[in-house]
Image 1 (cartoon, rainbow, N blue to C red):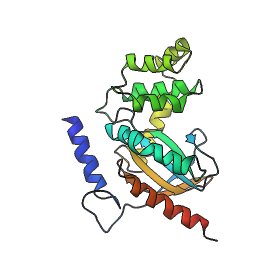
Image 2: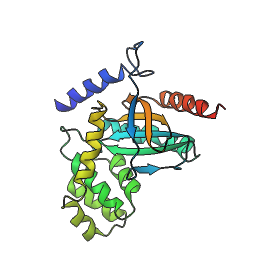
Image 3: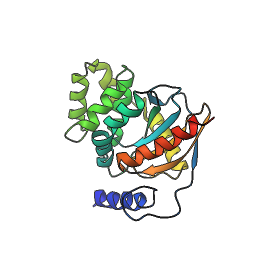
Length: 217
């Protein structure tokens, strides 16, 4: 039932986002502002003209859909070409019992410079991110498993994860995945939220609009 409630929530939110499937509205979400943090996990060039900030839950089926169906093309067309830097932040949903463990594990993998590889392993995996699955991902990625397990059993990274969640809630972001598309800036980003995995054409439209704006003299 909890999963069904989350599906209904995201469908409702998505119907209010410009370009999303479902009922359209004439009033798009208001822009939000967030301070740029030095400890964000970033993929792509730091000076790319456009930044996407993703709020994700590693047990979220919609986040998995984005990762499997949309992210490869986004990385190929925009991130690898230097047009976009991609930032991922944690927003854990209470209905997902393994979400905190997965988020902590990802940051423990980051201690061994395997953040993005571990994130991919979890989101592309076929099952839930249980402790057994997480241990298996760590082994397959060649992590120091003793150090990894010690980190996982500690509270080392929980405050960072909670800080991400607090940042999302301050912006009235409650569903995952949610994306903020913004022109890159050094101190503060401003952009309009897009809730849900959406479609690649919607993501392209947002990015191309910002890139065209950036290119204008």
